[in-house]
Amino acid sequence: MDRVRLGNEALFQDRLDLVQGKRVGLITNPSGVDASLVLTADRLVEADGIVLGALFGPEHGVWGEMPEGAAVSSFPEREIPVYSLYGDTRRPTEAMLAPLDVILFDLQDVGARFYTFISTLGYALEACAAGGVPCVVLDRPNPIGGEALEGNLSDPAFRSFVGAYPILLRHGMTVGELAGFLNGEFNLGADLSVVRMAGWQRCMGFSETGLFWVPPSPNMPTPETAWVYPGTCLVEGTNVSEGRGTARPFEQVGAPFIASPELAAALNDRGLPGVRFRATTFVPVAGKYRGERCGGVQLHLTDSKRFEAVRTGLEVIVTIRTLYPHGFAWRTPSSGRVYPFDRLMGTDAVRKAIEGGASVGEIVDGWEGEIVGFGERRWAYLLY
Image 1 (spheres, rainbow, N blue to C red):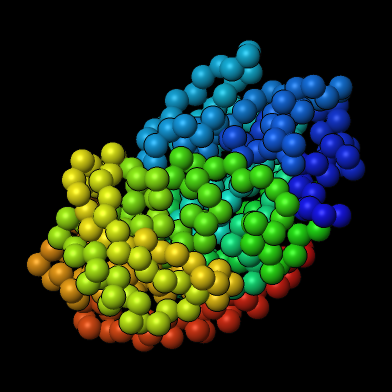
Image 2 (image 1 turned 180 degrees about the vertical axis):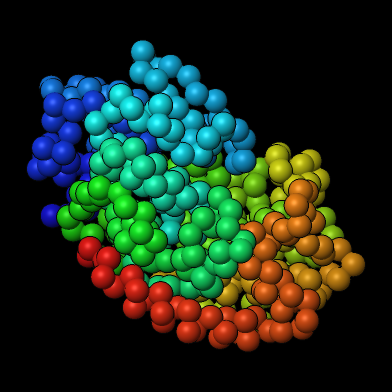
């Protein structure tokens, strides 16, 4: 086989018993396609003996067009109910599940804890368990590989939709493996089946799968974006632009108070593995500093397998804070008492350590026990 065979392809070729003669609900968006770019939803509609009874859309909607954080409404599509899981509710309700015999989950994850599709997966498992509806996950590659583990375990005290379950920031699991892990480790109780891929290996990045990349969200345009996202998304918790509103979201960061050559030189002097920083300027058309000229850097990966996304993201933040103490700031809570950066990290310990003068190396070294423990726990749920 010269490419990975996806779980949705295996469903129609080998596991139709899971959906044959049933009324199916599908959690999906435009990333839910096969290797020929045919939507799983369309294949279900065309299949004999299967009724597509409902579509469920995660953040960004079932068509993937809504911006981050925007509430999405439910609506009918071709006489099929389309329910939003990022609006009035973030989990299927009893009324939504009642007419259905099974729920399918077919979404492309990106390998980071705070990408909200993971929370949608867990909440769907919880809802299916409560409603007595089986859940089938159609597995897809982790686009940044399944070997490297990074970051901290989130503190349950900081639970939110960008960290609903205490897992590592970079978890190194596929959605199918995550489903098993969440269901087993947190006793969710769902009747879960995972339709496995064929040909995927843990060492693979997405470019090695032979598959087309369909952006799972508006600011995840390429697989390269996914590689840097577990680190540079942390910049969202500061007043520095994470590149939203540009052609390279998360691959470039900056702000009006940054001198591009100075920042690039300082970061390159850090000798971080697998990455070089290029001085750049950009003018976002949306998001922070819309219409303003920002100095900053673009991350260019020289070796994605050696690249440490979380460490790099923290080094970017600490370096900017050190160079521009009168410009840099943490975003302050808009409601409640949790800083956005703390919500992304799943703890306030990292922000407080940075404010106390700790180095990124000291912070990262402090996670070693959590990474080892998580690696041991996830072993029983790995499928590849």
